[in-house]
Image (tube, rainbow, N blue to C red):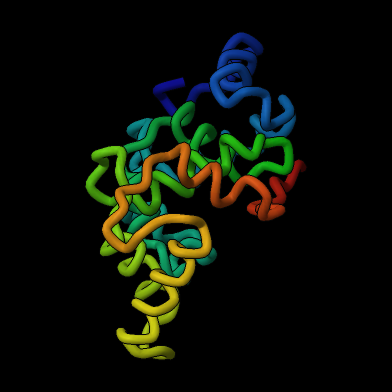
Length: 175
């Protein structure tokens, strides 16, 4: 699996399927492997952030820099695990874990008011003022029972997003 010129064996496919909690079918994993090989332009078995920038959907995403931080240097198994949060078969827990990692920019397991503000800034750009953004984050926190100085952990995200009907799905084209 490390060498992108090699083919996936049945064992490789099953191993990747198990690693991503069966969120993709075997046929989808084969399609993802083909896409991974296309992205891995230097054939080293890992995708760099620059190689991922060639995916138009990621390049125009306002959170692309945060996503690239999570993507840089992924091998195929990690690539599929990353994408599994977007599968229609992913659990709410998997989706919340992914969102939490996007917000937790320093990787310390806690999300601060400023990290939430940074995400909102990335999403809104110049469309709303800094004061409006702060008001939005404070209101969301207060509605969920938290204060501005709260440090949110993953369980808090689950509590906040658990009943939101969260949708994060992409279709994996299968040839």
